[in-house]
Length: 67
Image (cartoon, rainbow, N blue to C red):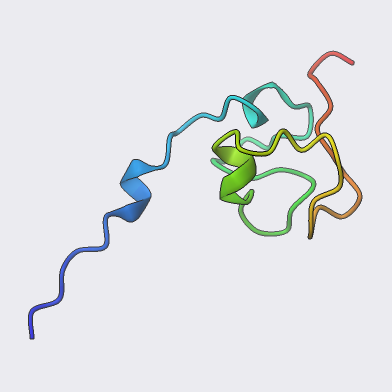
């Protein structure tokens, strides 16, 4: 059986409409102070603005840069 290439991550945008403007965003792609792993896709893709607690966010939510 031939295995295909897993290219699902190629459809994930490099920047987030939510996270790119948050003071907790780290320097690495999809990393921030709130999550020990990658920022969950619902937040990264803007389906959740992370202004309310989200599972695994260690009590840290969105705060705009400069505030």
